Length: 290
Image (cartoon, rainbow, N blue to C red):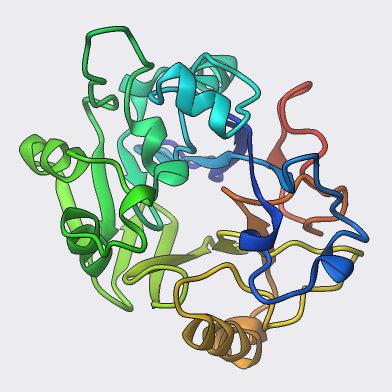
């Protein structure tokens, strides 16, 4: 029996740019542009990274990024930095392939989080679902939202993805406060309805460490967090309230590390952590600050 502690690895995915005003909600550009300058189209650089956890019997991937399934014109629209599937390269750098992943956990099904589930774009050929041996986990409400999206967020979801996931027979739909135990790793899920209905935040616990996975929570300076109203969301009130409750709740009373994942701004001080996360040289070294 493998008694070694879980291994955590930050994996880089496909980078892109998104509209700065949309990303910072009702915050004025005069405020957010002080530490996140935009380009000529008002777009700001967006990181796309996943967390890999390897235990004695499981290989777990949190998020998959945008991947490379988008057509060339859509890649150009989002000014994607790479055309290849960067997450697959990052897995290979860690000595793995997508076939080695046993669990894929998605906070929600927007294309910039779930696009990495699919193979890269090819002319005249529909993308295929990757991760043939993995169990997939996503919030029940968000899954249904993706299947029947509102006109306002329809463009954020990937048509046909819900059917591909269902057809695997390896899909689990999560509810608020569900718990997943994998060897010595416990994952507790908390539903957030601000950014998108049914989005799941992950609270990861091991015997020695506690992690909080989040979508976007940029930190302009060490130890600081953007004000609660600064939210990129379909429901600003719900999202800012959830952020405030999270900061004052029981999770924050447990010593741990914030790990910003997909849609995290590429800032030097985006997180302060004592967790022994493996950061592959040349891939993710700028993500974490000690």
